[in-house]
Image 1: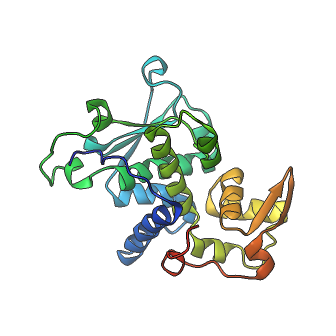
Image 2: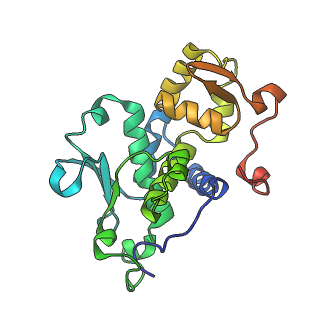
Length: 240
């Protein structure tokens, strides 16, 4: 084993299960934030991951929003990435994404020194940093014939972030008394969760609550049938 786990394929159910386990552990230790919009930072703190602002070198790092140093247990946010300062949804999603790398892709025992570090399965550079290059949509990856394991890791971390910030039980809570086909109601949900509009739309579509065509919203399968959102335990036998 090394600090970075060997690549493995993870489906949506497996990733959502990991996010739910993190939330359950935080709940059990009375570690949930008072305001849901602070969840990503609170989760980073739960894992003792520091979150700092740094100036990145674009020639060395490229145009990225953040990166994580597993052995230093540090998430660094790009000080020059202006949208991170002004867009709460992007900020929370980015921190959640890096936490996703920590949960899904890092051997935490070796990263914090509680295990003996073995030979790294990847390059030494990957031992020290995992880059957030972009938000990777699953459909984009499927269309990309040059998709790589790194692309899939980015998608996995991003999907984890979505499941962490918008778990099924929380979606059930915030949608009570609201019309998911009404943009002003979605705006209120977005602000309550501290997520971006597009991330909220993607999550609601993924949960089959809504469908989207152009700028119009339509009821999804679950919204039409009144079918409740199942927890991952209840739906684990059915691929998402």
